[in-house]
Image 1 (spheres, rainbow, N blue to C red):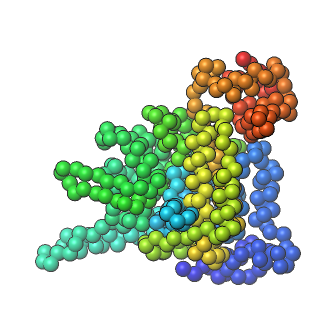
Image 2 (image 1 turned 180 degrees about the vertical axis):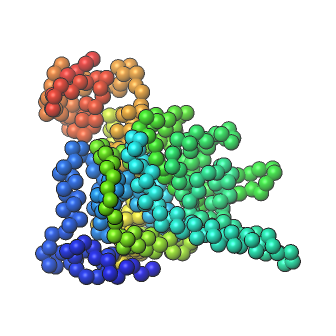
Image 3 (image 1 turned 90 degrees about the vertical axis):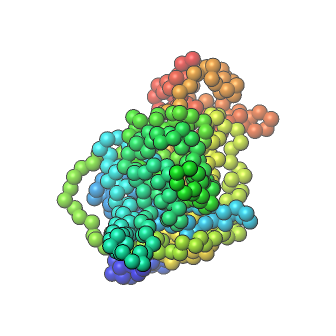
Length: 465
């Protein structure tokens, strides 16, 4: 799939196609990269410290995100995560990461777009998934033509046509697996409101649909055996999930045991800290941006259904393992461990997606995962870790003093009635047996507990209990 050769990266960029690496041009000519300037400006002006790391993407994708955000006022968190999810859907099972011998990882994502009513969550996601929707629309037209021929045939009746697709929205558990059985490349559940997806859990059976999704997330074997219909078995599953929800219903995601069985830990929450108010305007986007975005995703979709194993190069593997081996071992809150461990696995999935987006956009290799793109995947880990902790803080109900761990109680007792952040860090992070009790990040998370602490002013806290 060739890209639009007349599309410049920016108004100041060199002639050539959109997806040539802009870095090569700017470094050679000493020109400041406009996408880097745009992202630096966003980070400097954003009051929060958790901005979606748009710079993990190729320059072509970055420009699309910034232009669409500027014109439609969509959050860059929604656009960045939506494109990440759409790329995952386009890739499907056509690639797997070969982490080491015997360990293969697919790139399916379970993503939840969180926001207030009117934040244009659905509109942003619709933009990101437009190329996938167009692809499925063409497949449905082909299916309708084939089913007409099938129904009209009287002699030598052909085999009944199968509807091929990448997205599925309204389904029973059996229909989901049946559709996946016929679409072996994989499917993504696309739900405008994910609350309806949650409410369907156990609606059709009491067998535990949440447990089935735990298996689907991991890509393990799933089967259904029914006396009245053909049994279904899928040995190599690929199911993604994407959709939106409102802040007020976040607690629904942790109900019915989903906060203790590992289900909620598998969800990637996209939760902008400071979403902008949507303001209408008359500005239009250059259609070449849409054309090139379509071309990038089409290039990923048009890969073979037979999985291709893509290993980490030696430097990337060593860096990844060293990073993982040095993750915290002692967590202040129990739920931090589950979130951290599942996101570590997501780093591998992010790395596949980022590598292949650069392959489709810049011509980078699709036979190995580079150190550069492994580091970018870890930036996504950092972003989603903060959003996940924020969601847990808002949805977890604690029976405070009785439910606090010994470490939490010790720190609480050691702190004076009033203290500054620096003073609190010294007390909480003091060394025991040569190691800090907790990290500075963990202590600052602890300070967010409004049942225990009141923020008097910037950097000043009052202990309430």
